[in-house]
Amino acid sequence: GQSLEQPSEVTAVEGAIVQINCTYQTSGFYGLSWYQQHDGGAPTFLSYNGLDGLEETGRFSSFLSRSDSYGYLLLQELQMKDSASYFCAVLDSSYKLIFGSGTRLLVRP
Amino acid sequence: DGGITQSPKYLFRKEGQNVTLSCEQNLNHDAMYWYRQDPGQGLRLIYYSQIVNDFQKGDIAEGYSVSREKKESFPLTVTSAQKNPTAFYLCASRGQSSGNTIYFGEGSWLTVV
Image (tube, rainbow over all chains, first blue to last red; front, side):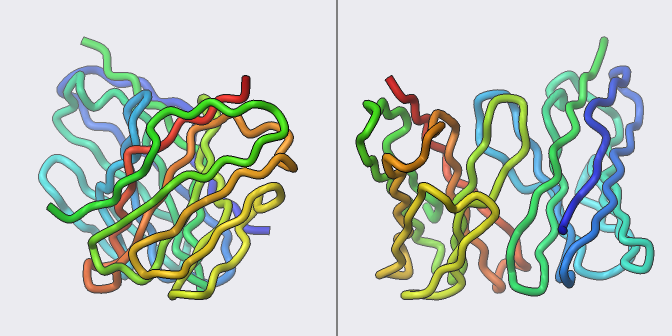
C-alpha cells in the first residue's frame, strides 16, 4: 500500500529552527509538497519539490531525496503563529495526491 | 481573484438524506480533488479527476459520488450510504502551469443531526 510517515507532534521554542521529516512509499512519484493548516482552517501550500535538493522560500525550506524516499520541511526563526499542523503529500504516478497524517507543531515562548 | 470556492461552509444533514457539496474553481486547472478530514486527523482522498468527464475513486469512495461535467466544477454528493459522514470536506485543484501547486477551498463542515 501507499503510505507517508511523519512525526505526530513536535515542540520548539520561539526563534529556534525545527525540522519535520517525511518518508514515503508510493506507486511512482512526481513530487513532494508541504502544507500548513491552522485549526479550523484549510491547508495552505508551502513548497513543492519535484527534483532532489533544497527549495527555499523565506523562513521555510524543503528538501527532497528521491533515492531515499525522504524529504523534510525546515522552519527557521520560529514564530508563535507557526503553531499549526504540517502535512507532507506525494503526487504519485497516477496523479493521485496522497497526504501524510500530519505533524502538530507547538511553538513555545 | 482566482481561487476555489466551496459551498456551503456549514451543512446539517438528517439521516437518510443525500447532500451535495459544491466546488468551483476559476484557476483553469485540469485536476480536482475531494478530501475528507476528521478532527485531529490527516486528509483522506475520496475522489479525484484529471480531466472533464473522467474521475477516479480515492481511498474512501464508498458512500460518495462525484461528477465532472465542466472543467470549473467538481461537486461531491454524500449519499445516505455513507454511515458516518460528519467531517470537514476539502476540495482542491492542481495545475501543471503552477508547478503542481495544490490550491484548497475553504472547506465545508458537514454534520449529521
